[in-house]
Length: 269
Image (cartoon, rainbow, N blue to C red; front, side, top):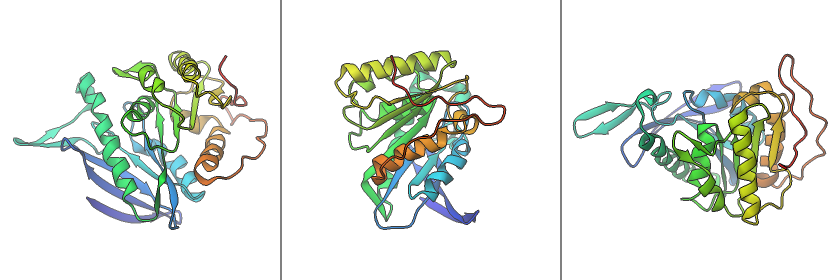
């Protein structure tokens, strides 16, 4: 593993290179925090984007005592090579099969393992935040790792690129959960409501604010940029479950200029 350190806006960001079990090179940006027992999250981007979509939110987490590791999923960003017996193989998401998308679970696995090995990280307070395809991958990963401290999903789908989530939700257990979705992002909205219903059916629906509904049609991590209060709402949630910070009364959300407003977190019907 190779790590290069640079400083940006008085915050440290490290570029990290990882190798998966199937020899795919994964690039990531690590936002560390000071302390001996810090919580952390892995950030998974959406389809056809890269880890840069998390830069603002990752910096926000870092400033509030939560470390973050934002990775480029295979075939995206700088994670485009696999080592084979015949030499390097180029990976391009445009040419991916359903199996290639499912193999992204290996990317999450190596990222989570690396994060757990970092000095100063509390192994019992590590969660995952995923957007769009990354949300599906995040939820599915919980089937193979029952020790996650929390899970945040932005615009998940019941089945996207053949990465299913309904069966994974049935097995999620008591992991603290938040789902954020735009009301007019039709497929993600209907999928999110169904996932919450499945959560209730399994007997783990004690939190009535698990579903955060935003007006408009923004998708995935774009909601963090276009819905003014959503980053703060999610930050407060993560501080509550990972840092034990009691939530403050939420003010009525207000829209950003020329962007859809949020709605106060409400349960799915």
